[in-house]
Image 1 (cartoon, helix red, strand yellow):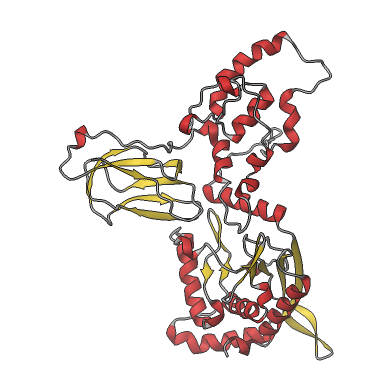
Image 2 (image 1 turned 45 degrees about the horizontal axis):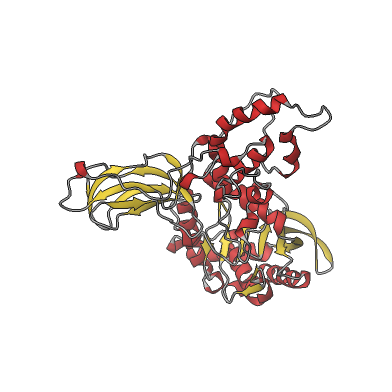
Length: 447
């Protein structure tokens, strides 16, 4: 009996992916554990292993296909003894990826699965929230299945969805299906023109339409299709700023003692091939500060507050396709040398797109360092569902009062962004104070 091979969910929030490359072809025999394909999620490229044994009888989705929904049949496997020539390709309820004309529909669908704890995913989808009620149906109240975008366009154009045949999954009406219906709807509209003072129907819902229309004003430019990662970054950061009330707290930190200790430690660790960065020491300092001030090591979860007994620090790493945050787990109990070795490995594999989902999903707080670019101070956006993020500026020589005397010291500005639903200002201030003290008296980081 033929076996359907479906698009796997390679992470808890994955809804679709890109089938980057097939490593097998029709007629190849595969066994359990064999690598069959490479699949790109919004964060990494991962290998897809065979579960069953058999012969590849059909490949339904070609390599390079984008937006392949989880559960879509991508290939058919013939069991041992079956003639692949007589095997019919497996079918499933989940449809193949939507066409380019329905790109907005895909975005609306993919935006409905988020990692925000305690939040109604339906409420987070801009298309779902902004979509007006569907056009009245002339079929006597029968249910019309249509995408949020199709419903919105139908309402704007005065199209009765009851008379439109859907080509999407399970007969779902998508944007492309409205093209023919739009032409037929325009004839009666022309016979009874609207008064000159009335706005065009397509202009009415403009305020609630989330799509941003490009305007080039004749300026030379290029257009690049957004990657899955960039779409995810845009969606999550927009949600964070819209839904999470941020409070920002900044402290100036004298780094001279930390830099001196770093030099001494690197001298001692040179024979082991370990070289500590300032960032490695700041990861340790943030983790210890979170453990010292547990009211900041939390997440807002609707009607609950999650309090963590371990500090897992997500560290922002810039990669060619965007930004990813690999996690140093239990950073508070690890030696700085162990943190340094782990970060080099995580950052290297992040740039290669080889991180496993559990290596970048989760974390109890984040750290973002832009000091290497000469940025003096900035306010980072919280990475939901975390409760805080520490933004690190450049260490620079500044006039600084030391023991009631004005001196020149190496000073760094650090800004904590806190979710004010979960963390009070006083508790955030206590964390910033603890972080500052750990950096200025750094021997406690190695104690």
